[in-house]
Length: 383
Ligand SMILES: Nc1ncnc2c1ncn2[C@@H]1O[C@H](COP(=O)(O)OP(=O)(O)O)[C@@H](O)[C@H]1O
Ligand SMILES: [Mg+2]
Image (cartoon, rainbow, N blue to C red; front, side, top):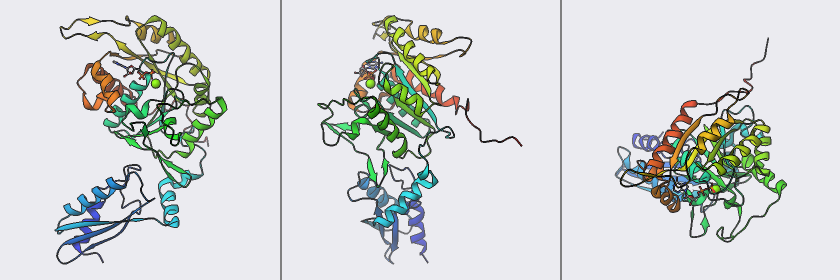
């Protein structure tokens, strides 16, 4: 029987979450034991999945803080151990549940909204917007995952602060399950995390279509995202192999089109959306980026012109597909760029910045739409 102080420590430990799995360590079987002596000194033994797991220090610190906060505890210490292979197997099963047997987490019956972000050409801010939207959606309380599928131009780890000095934070591997690092509340996986020791600043990935397809397939199958409300994909620019793979692997994905106000960018953005439509995906809407820069005196400089977002939305709207909305127009903003360069997205570090505020507004619009059931099997059989 635990003493009342021990029960209080256990209750406090319910608030400690594994940062990668985002579930309480008590529920995950990571607490081996709790002792509190007559003096009120608490000792908590926790079990990590693997030695040197990236989350170890955080879990240890959170455990210590929780134990110290429990009523009846005067001081606390934490003993850290490592799971045996059998314990780890049980852990993986507990985390993955019956989903382990399923080939893919985001198949037709999944309730996760999958949003693939596409653009015609590179450099329009697709990755910056995708990362900003992901973080903003997580701020809205949604459970969010992000797949950086831009093989040649992966940049999400940098924007989200998972990559510093040429080192990118690595996913944790537990047998055949891959746990993605969590950045600002977003479970994130990137091609850039699978380059081994190669420096991503100087490493080119030159894979052919089938290799790309297999990699995306592996991301969707072996990376454990848990129950997500939204999965965002940062696609490479254009209408290439990955867009088609995504169409095949995730036919229920919705497509968000990013373009600049410039007409030339609008043309290619429309083409990338049409390819997505050919593979059965629905166009969720258009976001214009790099719109007019607001000057200190209030005047606006339209470096890339204006109207591109509206143009793309109008061209994609028709009788067959309905109205494709222009969800927002994000202005050029030095603070927005700097946030991405520093790995601290402006939606968190500078939410009042005009660009960040517009990204947050778009995220709220998307969050308010909820899960789309269009074209989805509801699992109801006729009698
Ligand atoms: N609204 C904006 N204001 C200022 N700079 C931006 C904005 N959006 C993107 N950028 C910057 O433009 C560059 C390209 O953006 P990025 O997101 O990498 O584009 P893409 O993924 O389309 O290639 C980056 O340096 C980024 O910081
Ligand atoms: Mg990019």
